[in-house]
Amino acid sequence: MGKTYQFECELCQYRVKVSGGADAGVDCEVQTVVCHDCRELFDVFTRVRRRATVGEKFKPLHPEIPPLQLRSAPASPPGWKTVVLACPVSDRHQVETWKDPGRCPRCGCFLQKSGLPFKIWD
Image (cartoon, rainbow, N blue to C red; front, top):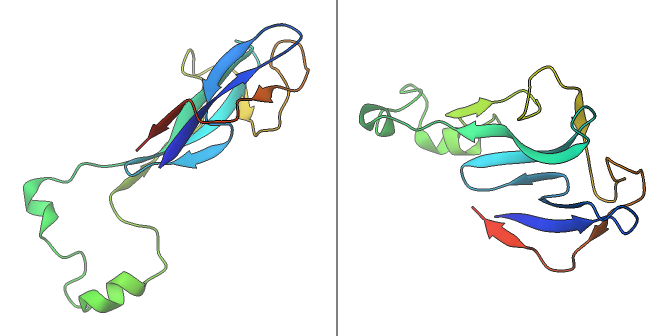
């Protein structure tokens, strides 16, 4: 389950609702990024589960390997699509990962995190 928090800057009154770092739900993973061109924080997808067609649901991936061995394999789960970090406004903007505690993208002061999650999502 992913959680979204409200962050606020006491100096410039900037407010944003983001996860505050890397977070994951059932069907996706997100990462909070700071866009230096927009001067904003965003949650962007890093991995998204692909929807399987009806035929793929029951088709074994490796029929020669027993299902028990497939479950214990440390490989990443099939059916996931990895996404490159980018600003949702423009792909040309410069972004970098952001993690709480972090600085305000507008004035540089540390953002204050709300105590309870604003939203819990899957």
